[in-house]
Image 1 (cartoon, protein in one colour):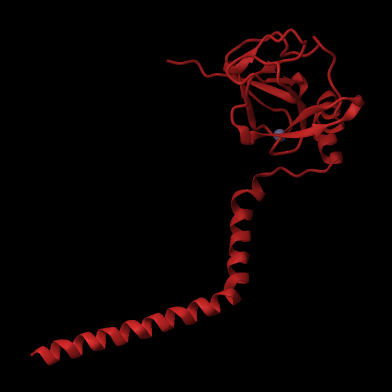
Image 2 (cartoon, rainbow, N blue to C red):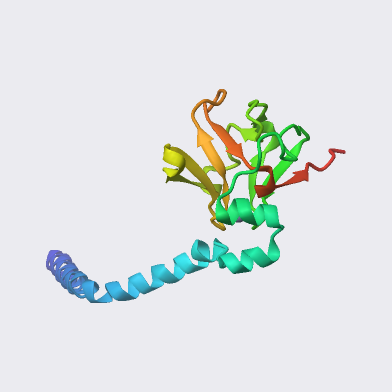
Length: 184
Ligand SMILES: [Zn+2]
C-alpha cells in the first residue's frame, strides 16, 4: 500500500514538473505575442477614450458655432469684461461647453470674482478640462480648454476662494447654461 501511495506522489511530482516546463515554454513564447496584446489594448483605447474626443477642423467649427463663440473658442479671443451673459448670473444649473456640450461647471462652484467674467472655483470633474501653459501677451498664464473638443474656455488663476484657491475665469460665450430641473 505504501508503495502505491509513494508511486502516486512520484507521479504527481512528475506531472508538476511537466506543468512547470510547459509554463516556462509559454513564458518564453509570450514576447512574440506582445504585438497581439498591444493591438488589443489599442483597440480598447479606441473604444473608451479616443472616440470620446470631438475632432472637428476649425472650418467645421466656424460653420456650426455663433461668430462670438467661434472667435473665443477657436481663435482664442477674450470677450469684453462685464459684457458676458453669465458674468452676473446665479441660477442653479450646469454650464456646458458651447461647442461640444460637455458639462463643465456647476452653479454650486460659481462665485462673483468682480473680474467681469463668470468665475468658478472648480470644474465638475478634473478630466473635463485641460490646462495648457500660455505665454502670450508677455505673461505666463494657464489656459483652460475643453478636454473633449479642445475649445478655448478661459484661464485659471490661483487667487480663487476656498476650498481650491483657484479661479476659473471663463468666457460666457464658451459656455451654455442649462437650468437645473425643479425638484418635486
Ligand atoms: Zn467642448
